[in-house]
Amino acid sequence: MQQLGAIRHDWTEAEVKALFELPFNDLMFKAQIVHRENFDPNEVQVSTLLSIKTGACPEDCKYCPQSGHYNTGLEKERLMQVEKVLEKARKAKETGSTRFCMGAAWKHPADKDMPYVIEMVQKVKEMGLETCMTLGMLDEGKAQQLADAGLDYYNHNLDTSPEFYDKIITTRTYQDRLDTLQNVRDSGMKICSGGILGMGETAKDRYGLLMQLANMPVQPESVPINMLVKVSGTPLENVEDLDHIDFIRMIAVARIMMPKSHVRLSAGREKMSDEMQAMTFFAGANSVFYGECLLTTPNPETHRDVQLFKKLGINMEQRISDTDETQEAALMSNLQKQQDSSHFYEA
Image (cartoon, rainbow, N blue to C red; front, side, top):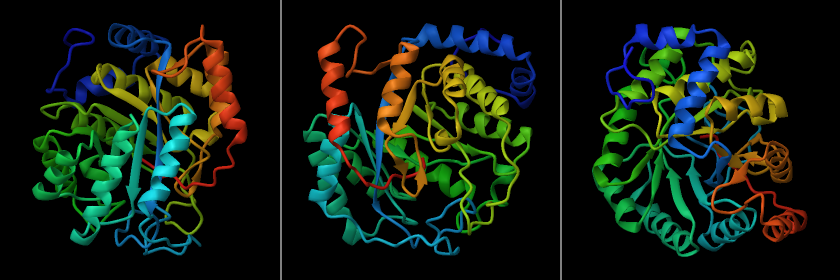
């Protein structure tokens, strides 16, 4: 195996398998070395993710309560008004988020919706927040429109390995996803792309997902690792629970393979104890989604995250430092005032 911490685009299955099969303590040690070489080990980037259009998605992703193929009791919503989006963005900034992500349950954005989407990007950026969107597939033209509007990141997850993909989704191909990511990269935007664990995939599928991400010509700047949230009415509602040690191993191997990417804890955090989350941070996770829910699935409440960060001595990137008690007190005051029932998206 080549030098630890080197950025590579030629990972083999045998090499990834060898990392996963290391004794747990050895793997964690290697991941922490790589993490410290590239990031402040006690700092976490915080993002908030808002659903700007919920439900009735034509895709058949078996994990997703937004799919129009399944009856999950989800209330469908039209594209949110721009001012309502901006209100949510202001609240996100007040509670410490540095990036505001907007997700729509579309196969791809329609021409008629692009002006509203572009206005959202432009006005959120004016607040001083980084911007991210996930709107489904993008062709070259729409990717360039979003880039020209100033969108910083585009999220489009690969979800799993190419081999397992058609067991989860049949309404778009793996190549469709790769094409969208290439259009995003060609436009000049940064990529946010990861996957979901606990869908019944094998260890080999986890190797394959990380190889697809790490072996891109430019590795994704942000890599969300989701733990499946089982939703009644979806085909995966009764899938076997994921072993939490396996999830932590995934974080650690992702950190080693993509040393300069932000590795994000996303969906599934409400099932993680403080101790498990602490282990994921030690394994190299350094980004979280913040808020009471991710679209239609639960997420730890914001104040719980702040308390956990304080307990662990972790600072929120660009917002909170452990020596700035005034800033922390202001944040906690804002959190107490908020009764935010916004919906967030799994990414």
